Length: 606
Image 1 (tube, rainbow, N blue to C red):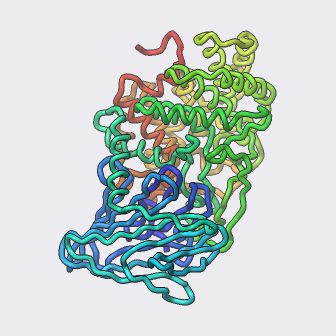
Image 2: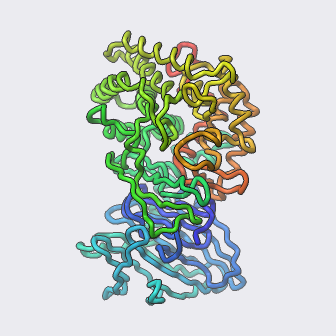
Image 3: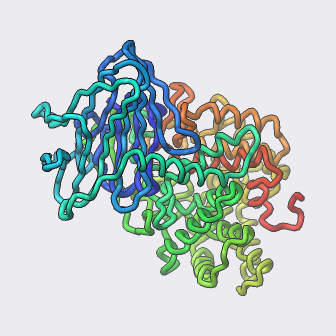
């Protein structure tokens, strides 16, 4: 059975990622890319679905762990009655082929260790053919896939039913026993091995040098650096695309059906991601993200999607893996995401806002980028009056979501500002008229005078956490009476133990009810407090959110206040982006929420 979500650590090489449990087991690995089939899938089932465990034979073990400095090198320390060992796990940045290196370092005494390797290609479905090469390397092949294991430890095949490779070895103080797992293609010769110690030194140096660029942020600096390292680890460096998470089907409700594949790139993350990267000092990463964005949406504006693959792929067909029993029984396990076909009007505003903010930060201008924006504006002008599936990607009947319409307004508002501030050509007066029409409609039909609050969709009485973003995107000032009423209503009806649900429990989203609190929404409440000058409330909520991180500083998509555990895909890029921005909002004079809310207005704070 897999561990609690918060008991996992992330390692990665900016092309793929793995999750390592406190027990020394790698339970999730998709190779060679984030969105490839998993060859370790025990996270969503049992050990027979693939895992690689290295741990002391003694079950009575004290376990502590940390990342080495500001890197993604994981150090897990096992202490037994006989001694102590350090398990060092990392994925070197690639030169040719991807690798996972595990070093077992003796610190004290003599510790008897076990290792068990169960490779299962195709999300736990395919048992590979395992042979031993002349140099002792174990080779596992299934169709095009090949994985090689190199180690000095004597390994043998065990258990015909489970077909595992296992070994026992003893580590004394001062000794290091290396293991190296390498992915390659079965029609090619096995690649040459890396030197484990050199790979460790180079990996640590690269992460350390990269993280030095991060700008300080007072008492939140450590949390920000770890979140940015996580965000970097979820970036597919060949293209600049950032996956929402490296996992699929970790449930938003234990035992439920809200299980989605997040190994793709969502357009709605664009502005907040860009602001987080630029304010932290990572201009190269922000530029790569913007360029990925422009390439992804290029083409016919009628075919713009809400998400894409890490290289901009458009076909993200959703299917189920019925042989996997799911994380703690949460089924179905889904691969792919059918939401890519949905109409979500807010993404048009996100794209326009991100590109406008990029200009303000001085990212290299692109004439073709403005041409893409002009095409997108023509499309949003045609479709903004239609109902859509909204920011939460409902699988029920489309509606006129208030936030979706407000973000359609953002698209035209940012186009007007870009034209006026940067001398770009376009039909500004027509855009101004459309923006005014959208703004008027949202204020008339999206606001309920009886509740004194904006509502989730036109004509509804339901609240929605996305309404917290209306001041953040500049739709209305935070101290405007309707926004004060909206915040008050959300505090009264959407909070659970002080954290924010996405929407009310009885809202119809086409799925059975029940989920945790959505962590990004609680960070949005922090930002709303900051805009309303409620800094004490903002500080208190931010501190509570930071306390939800696991011992390594990682957060998932949601949190269960009753069970007091993390839920949803892990680690979640959008949550860590929200953390970075909220921390900067609270600790820095240049606040991302004000940069976005005022978007070049003359009344922006100094």
